[in-house]
Image (cartoon, rainbow, N blue to C red; front, side, top):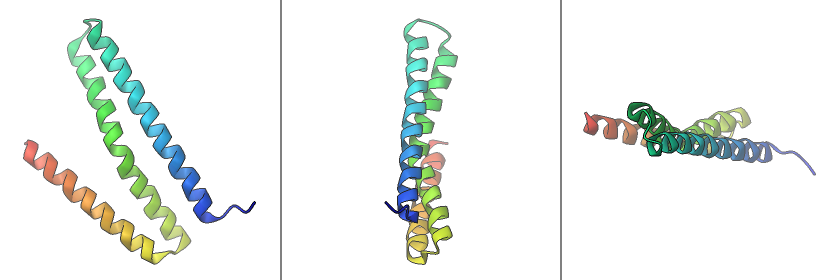
Length: 101
């Protein structure tokens, strides 16, 4: 079985997505537990917010890792495509943050 660059990329992306979901789920579980126990509400809210931010950041990190790996493979079509996707994500996040303010 050959280990092609695309195979390695898929493995890296799978680990990244799995790790992001597990870490965010852990934060959400801890924050929810603190909140349900009637503990320190600001601490619970902070942990819950951290879990949600981690969950939302996971796909953005996937795009960044893909961009770096495609550049290392010198696959310029996918570098350009991934840059467009990354740009759309950045614009979306920026607009969402500006609307919140």
